[in-house]
Length: 71
Image 1 (cartoon, rainbow, N blue to C red):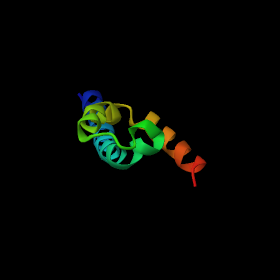
Image 2: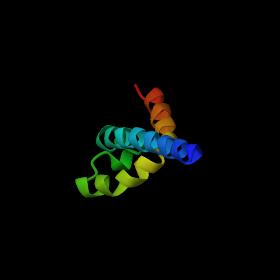
Image 3: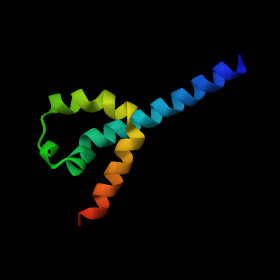
Image 4: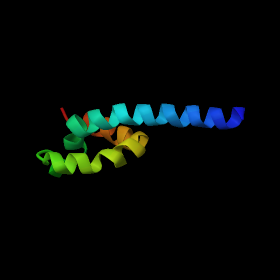
């Protein structure tokens, strides 16, 4: 039982961190990672929200790399 609770706790932390990241990424970061998405409508941003939540470590690294390259 302790293993299942630990896995659930870790998954919950991952999900909460992903949610916090996804909101920031969809509102500010997507335009820096992909120039074509700079002026994307709200529908597109809502569409990529679940994927951003799930893949937040990958997108965070891309966001950090794109921020370093641009002044």
